[in-house]
Length: 302
View (cartoon, rainbow, N blue to C red):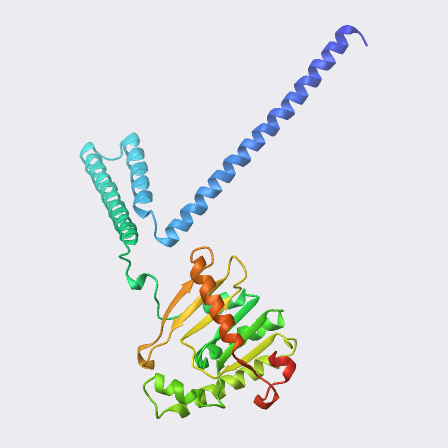
């Protein structure tokens, strides 16, 4: 091959490689552009479904329509000017709403700094998401008086979790002693101790069924208390950073309902540890359920 031929071959080779490199770079840029458009469309869909930033999208759409109509000359100058003013009014309205939201948020932050926080900010009437939270937990601990409603709502999920390997610990007042009478007195209905016993019997039946679930042997522990706990507790994975503790403040009148609040380890470290210690103390002073209560010793725990 002559010098000229070799030079020509190299030139063609470099041109070919350069073309391939350019094609790859172009493909990468196209892919990046496509990804940006997809992200924008997903964000648009999320905002529209949530009803957020609607004034911004509406203003942008109207501005685009006005621009197109102005270029095409489809509408007259008066109509175009009026539509432009309407668009500006919509934009101003959205900005005013945003300023009000910022002002409200600022006032709330300042109030929190002064300790002027409404009790409604942290107390609720129930635990609506509790079944979903239990569904993902590996360590489930519950303390209460009769727990009739709690166990009725959670027993199916507790069975599934125990079969999947989760540990379930439940403590409630002892139906065999005088504690139901104490619970009745605390609730200002001293002549209704039988009601508490009936609720306890129903809860104990559910706990026996839970402890005897095939595949859950040894993972369900039950203890009975000879005192009425001052509050109810639901601990979910308390040893993990993602754990949480729900606290029920018991009312003296059942008709008024119980106030509930939630503590988290990363936000309420000291109080989270406090209620975790409270559970440990209650559990330590509880009587393990055994065969006399209708439980197999291994299933009830020790």
